[in-house]
Image (tube, rainbow, N blue to C red; front, side, top):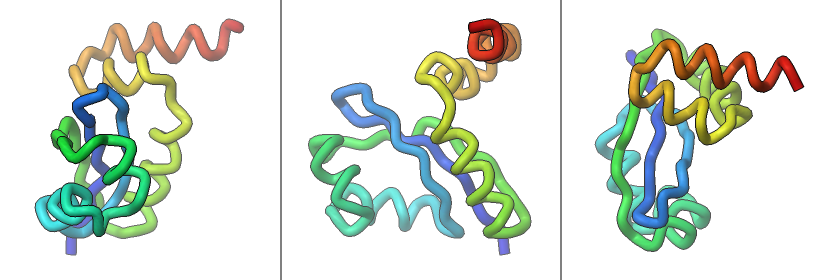
Length: 97
C-alpha cells in the first residue's frame, strides 16, 4: 500500500499538511467536515490539493508530514513550485538567523 503526504490550500491562502493512504478520499473528508475541525472551519469550505509525495510506509509519510509542518510558508511554497533554488534559499535563512 502507498501512503501520501499532502499540502492543501484554502481560499484564505492558509496551508494544511497531512498524510493518508487515499488522497482523494481524504480531500473529500476535509471538504465535508470529516477531515478535522481545523480544515473545515479554518479553510471556509474551499480546499485545493496543492502538493503530494508518495511513500511506501505510513511511518515515512507521517515523518514527512511532521517535517513539513515545521517549515515556513515560503519554504512550503518553494517545495510546491518545485523550485530548488528558492527551497535552498528558504532553508539557508532558517539556519543563518
